Image (tube, rainbow, N blue to C red; front, side):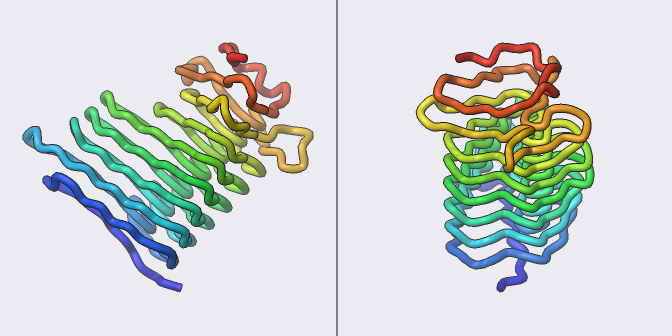
Length: 254
């Protein structure tokens, strides 16, 4: 086991790529990004791209105010911060927001997280976003893509046990979201959710053995009008939810 802290910062750097294979990043503490922090920032119209690829391995038992396991952030036009996880596990991390992962973009920055298989599990948010929190401000772009894999057994005191999407986009291409818990939106809280037609993404709701649970409303998904942007479910998908989803008034496209 490696008790290490990996900080990946690009500032006034055109391109930075880091590839890590296997190993474990664990038992670290930071203000933002307890285990890993990936930051891309621009100034004076300079552009830079930061890319971190992790193949297998584990990021676990880290603590931060935001992004207990990982924080990926971009600031400024043409800045791109990208994290690719192939297999691997993000687990047992703790933060106020984004127990496992915090994704943030602002001022035309672009923040991307791609998970190919792998797990995001058993993370805790003392406020919101047990597994993942996404947020974009001032024309930023934040995107989380899951290609298979699982988001399970994460917990948030308030909103979004599995995923909290404040203003970003979530694309689920296969995989499962299950056994997460929160006050609202046990599986997912927020809009900007799309499901690829080719594969079946499952978000489990009440009545199932793998159910996500919400103590107030939205066991599987909680979406109110504030977060009703680009929220669609395409044909071929399975979405389990209960009557607590009645606050959703948009169109689930079939």
